[in-house]
Image (tube, rainbow, N blue to C red; front, side, top):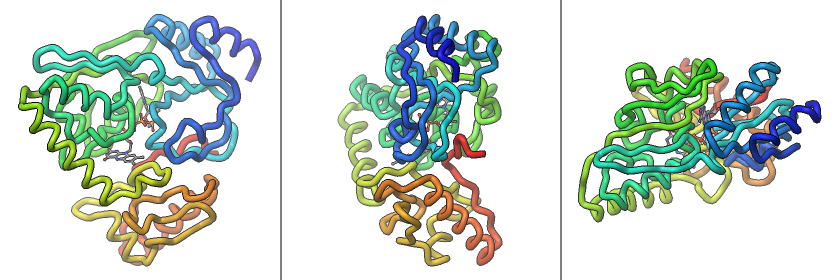
Length: 300
Ligand SMILES: Cc1cc2nc3c(=O)[nH]c(=O)nc-3n(C[C@H](O)[C@H](O)[C@H](O)COP(=O)(O)OP(=O)(O)OC[C@H]3O[C@@H](n4cnc5c(N)ncnc54)[C@H](O)[C@@H]3O)c2cc1C
């Protein structure tokens, strides 16, 4: 990546060079990214995007990196992070607004403090609002699609509000998964007034259920595989005898076998080897093709 790119981007935002993707993902795996930018206004963001598009420089928005499996290779492009500055949340009546870089957990906690219910399901999802809208994150039979009214999107050089219908949400997908060149700048969600203590209790209940069932003590990217229709991916993985299976530092969690955790500086190669073995063996035994829920980024 040319020095000039760094110099131009630095005019509009804090910019860093050669930052390991392992430091930007919850799985703690990934080679270096040539440049990372942290815009602090929509104007600066717009200028950065114009420059990258004009110069045809590849870019990737990373939220909290909680759904990514990055390769060990260098990413010779620009990572854009909204979570350092563009993370504000606002509440007015039954509506709540969050910038794309806002933490989903903070959004849910702030909503609870305002006596607004609807985000409890998301109070343990360790991503950003942008990342959650992108893949229609969900838990406990609720998902972003159910509360999202509108999404402010940067597309084709403009900021445009898209309605819920226009977002084409489905299970862990949306129109954004088909348009990685668009960027989610903000979302408006609809919530309901409710007793704050009741909301807090439900969130606490969800939190203890996660603590009891997920290996949160290790780096991970959450559930590795989507649940096939009417089934649980973890049961299929258990069925092929892979609970506790290890490849290098990557281990299928004993506690929840749809989590593959990084126990000891796992490489991306260790991790993907386990993922591929599971897909192959599940296919062989059950004739079901598991699809990953996490996204592979920067793989040749
Ligand atoms: C312990 C743990 C538990 C989890 N539990 C759940 C769960 O219960 N339910 C669930 O659905 N997920 C869960 N996840 C997965 C993950 O937290 C969610 O998918 C989350 O929505 C990802 O958000 P992120 O900001 O980290 O996105 P990233 O991982 O940074 O990015 C994921 C994708 O979103 C894109 N993206 C991110 N921000 C934007 C933006 N502003 N505009 C456009 N594209 C963007 C990225 O380019 C990338 O393609 C869990 C993960 C962990 C580690």
